[in-house]
Length: 118
Image 1 (cartoon, helix red, strand yellow):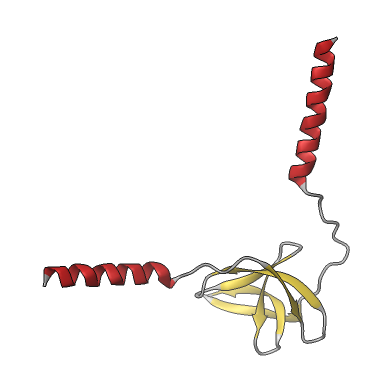
Image 2 (cartoon, rainbow, N blue to C red; image 1 turned 180 degrees about the vertical axis):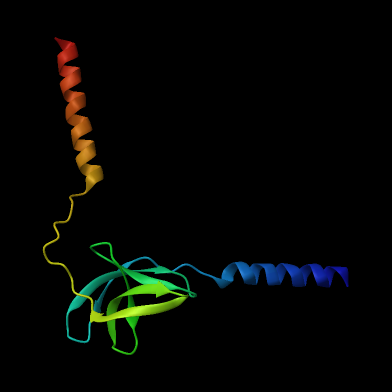
């Protein structure tokens, strides 16, 4: 009987851990009701999830309007903006910062090593 209780507790513990799985964070293209395409990444788990836009905004899908919209949380309730989210076309994306830093460090290294040789 003791073994059965241990097994049961282990199964319940494992089931509890697996219960709240995180969202798969890959960029996907979604269409609004008006035909506009959004590139979004899912975040959160099955209890609460939202989408991250390319311009780093959090939005949710409103089932009533069938659009992705800005939202706010008040008194543990989600309040939608009731206006479809629009992509800001004027945003200039930053270049890959890691590559730029490596370039700068490499150039500084070359300059220092050249000056040391003289």
